[in-house]
Image (cartoon, rainbow, N blue to C red; front, side, top):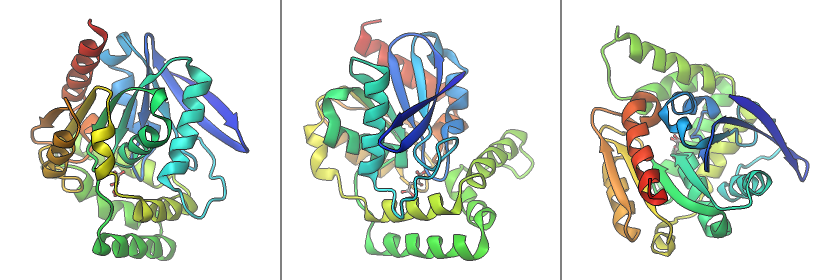
Length: 272
Ligand code: MLT
């Protein structure tokens, strides 16, 4: 894996590249960074595609830019700059959860850059009132109690239930915790405000004209299968894959099933 920095408009984003072939941009969720894609980047998908895992501003190796709010549109404009820097052609775009909100914003604002969309464990709907209030409470809690308390409290929602001594489950928890606790508190607060204020994209879904794959874990407690089914039904020709016994982080929890679904989707598009 190779790391490069893309600089534009006082912003500097780290992008991590692996593999060879047509470009696919991977957009992480909250409170994570490019490391959530490591299984994908070191697996079979990289044999036929150049995978570009972006650290969104303030995440991973991309510095926080001083924003009080990380609007999904700002993230999408950043990603458009990355795509324009790395490619003259439209690229595959894969977004998990918050990354899926960014992928939808990218389609809304920069559709010609998108060759296909994979919307993973995400939704189109905006936050309801209670969810908005919960974002504000989480922002207060992270300032008062710190990152570890916030991250630990999220683990059971992010990951499907596993036996307490399951080594793979323990490793997953450690990986999620290490990403979440390495984010600056400023990033977490700005993300929570951006998530709280993001627009409802439901009405935009029928405008999606590129091949689209919707993936969801059967036990996803944050963006449940019903949300994925609604999204897939609203996008002409969209394919839906539900991964059994899996929570909100399909690419980490079931990397082989994820790679199979995404690899087959890309092969159909590329006629391979
Ligand atoms: C994520 O995984 O990116 C977040 O759970 C998204 C959200 O909270 O809406």
